Image 1 (spheres, rainbow, N blue to C red):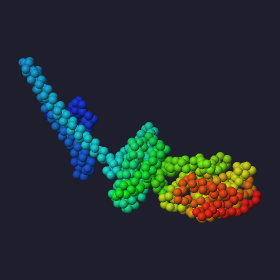
Image 2 (cartoon, rainbow, N blue to C red):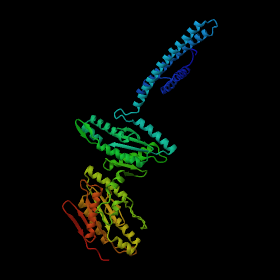
Image 3 (cartoon, rainbow, N blue to C red):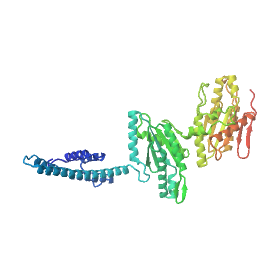
Image 4 (cartoon, rainbow, N blue to C red):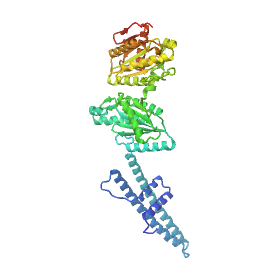
Length: 507
């Protein structure tokens, strides 16, 4: 090698020599030396570390290159001695001994260089990990999150591999910080991060997205699977105390879930997961919603309904709608009911409102209303007649409600009205008003039926109510209305059952 050989050649030789001696993958770092170093007064800490690491590697390369040059010169001299025909046996032995010694020295120098390279590689690797790890929580940071999400979306576009994102936010974290101090707030974030790692257990990347918000990227997972995992995460956070100053403090979290869909970019996916998170906060927090590309739905819906609506021994005839999450059968009706949601939407909304009652104490009243003698009208007048009855009933109901109220059709003849913020007396008043309006209504001759009536059961949510309890209490009141002759409203309170009745009109 000539003294004027450029640095690229020296680096190449160093790489080949070390690789020939069994060097590890750390040797690949030597190729970084191709990049010249430049000093920037305003450089970041990471840039300074990279520059200093590169300078050390370049210095090591120069030293090894000098040793290689010296070794090459020694080998050439010894080779020249061996080529001399005048050498006797002793001279040859001495030359060979010198060659062996030179090779041993070179090997030791290469071993030392390899060790230094491995140490430098470990330092670089450690720094790289630190650069992609959140210092407080020890999970991936925002940079690592962004890189992984970009990679997963590229995989989705190339191979249609699904990817689902969970965004999670610690509830009322500012209030928690203000109440217990920033140190305890940091402990809370560390607790959440640790819980996330334990529940996710390598199934995806856990990252601190920012502040009190975390993200979980699930490559290869669809929304249904991710939703189940999200609910496990939420429950685990709720069940894991934050230990501070000999106290156990409880925290909760809200979450949003979204699965990548065609033509989405990373910002679109994050925005939909964030919409799900916002829906969870709006629903009272400590819950999770999945955004399906159109709307956000409460994740606990299917699980809660399945658990709460198992048939019981006292299940009555006509109560089938209480034990099914399938939409009501509208096949016999020629026109859909305007502005009335389906049974699954009702269960979703009821679960959300009950959660709101539990967390904020907001009252909630439920009205179940039923068309009296529905089967008789259907059998005598046909499907067109009941279609008119149900459309008119839905119009009377919606006309009596506020924007925040909701009405759903639960079965062929049964409707449900949710009145958030309303107490029992409010519900009784509204139900009685609707009953009287329907009673006074005379339908046009072409409707096929002159009149119809309705009965209602009204119940207010009480502490500890779950989906099953409030529905069964309301259903029992509706059955009581039927026992009293129909065309009446029955409500309950802590003291007594209240009724309001009127004689059914004659046909």
